[in-house]
Image 1 (cartoon, rainbow, N blue to C red):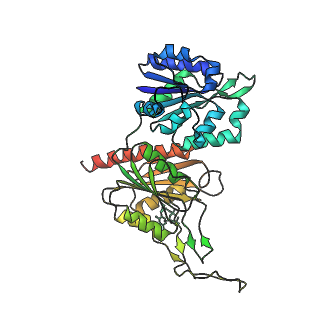
Image 2: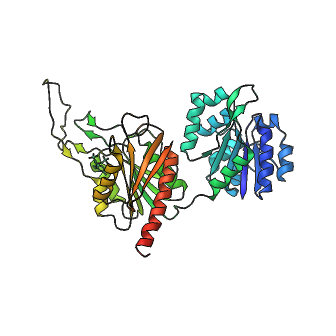
Image 3: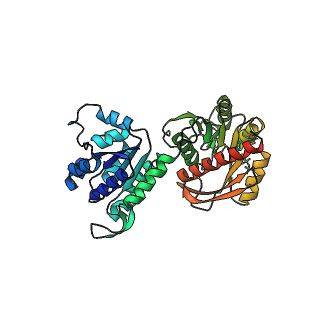
Length: 399
Ligand code: CTP
């Protein structure tokens, strides 16, 4: 495999030499890129000798002005080890002021990042926010080990072992273009049902789970369309995002895009009721109490269940009690193949959180609990089970 090894300027840069040697022993081709800070710690010559290739250092001292593009295109995986706090911040925000950061933006394949830094720098909210951005982008983070650090402190921050990083690279590259050829239609976020021109009914859904699913599907090679209610999340890379506001708009867009879809996942928290006749003007506070008659919104998932054809249909159930029973009831009543159930309200998980803990209730009769993990990890597990279920259903139908 052709690997780019990007080296940031930490004391652990010397450990990258061991990683380069290990990857060479595993018969990979390794092209090293060093930041200028990295060169303060280790000479490029060390890596040139280990890899048998010239080390890339300076954006402006190379053979061609577009070498970062050609290097990006020629390699299959980008590994950044060690990644310092500064380098992670640049990657998270898309700053491109040297060869490595420019190459990162031009690179479209899997990215593995192994951070290292002082424990306080690691735990700083800025670093943790950057880490979350990179993780949500679908990059594989090889967490630092805990132990004695060069700064004299003890805690998380030590670069992971070269073997651990090499394993992560292997896993990242072996996976997973397993959704190639699939067309995934997703919904995410809440809907907003207007009460007048300035007010609406909505719910606490942040859209994070649906966006994580979109990211995971795109990273695994699917063509993805995401119909999104109002959320504050950036469009995932390679995903077509269509913004809607109300349940009625969401329904319209879902059915506009249904025909080519092979997998449909309804992660959106659709409002169940709306005001059919929305007043043109703002409602005034003329009475001490007002009441409103709300009508049900279209149940998009139930309609999808009736029109699903060969598609695999996944719904969500956010419950405050009787999770497994409610999830199975929805699976059956809405003719789904899988319901992802999670408990909401009262816990720190669910709607607004970056993490989740869910159960997968399957039409095969199985129920699979997925322990607490980031929504991005849960998203990949959901697709793993979707693919397994697809195989089970196909063999049951004699395909
Ligand atoms: N759903 C939908 N259209 C609606 C309501 C819900 O498509 N009008 C979908 C959601 O996207 C989700 C699933 O149905 O995938 C379950 O949503 P939920 O609100 O938990 O279920 P309801 O059927 O509304 O049941 P209840 O409110 O009674 O729990």
